[in-house]
Amino acid sequence: ANDWALNQAMRPNKFFSQREHLQLFYAALHKRNIPVDFARPEDNLAAYKLVIAPSLHLLAGGEADRLKLYVHTGGTLISTFNTGLVDEHNVVPASGYPYDLTDLFGLKVLEFDPLPPGEENNLNFQPVFPASANHPARIWCDLIEPKDCQILATYTRDFYAGRPAFTRNRFGDGRAIYVGTMSTPAFYDDLTGWALEQCGIKPLL
Image (cartoon, rainbow, N blue to C red; front, side, top):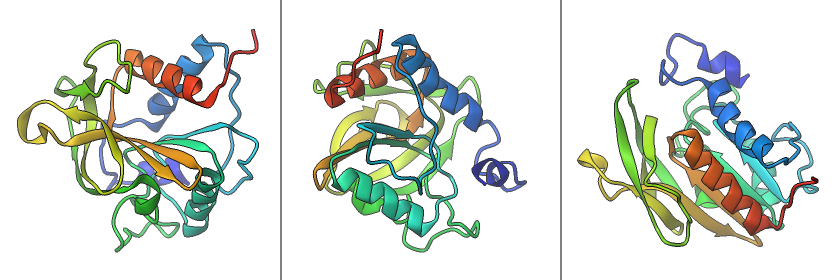
């Protein structure tokens, strides 16, 4: 359904590829010999210490509830921009972005700015996140209004400067991480390494 919605004529960013976005996360985990399962948001996620849900563009209310239950009972969720932009009927929610998950992430996405290829911003990270560089922000930049979340990185240039780009929020017994932009493979290497350490996940080999 997400792939269908993102291929409609009115898609939010013609330069964004969901497959390429997924591949960035998958490649970083594969590099560390971490096996990956593919699940749906409505599946029982309780067995997983870490769930990565990039670009859930189309999200039903029941699916949002499942994700909240997973985090509330101790799970760690990484989500990204282009999440909850429409409901299961491909209708924009009146409650704000991401649909039915603003409490989970402790933020609201006010709007987003598509960047054409070759144009980018940069990210400035807080010490709590061990970034190997000030990674670039590409393709998509969410303009985030933080509520209860911890800000892990901000944009550095233009009208984005100082605005949150990467956050973490406590929700019940778990944590919900939100990445409001797209970056290079080096960032996803840093992100997955940090998340695996936070969750106590080690490679099988």
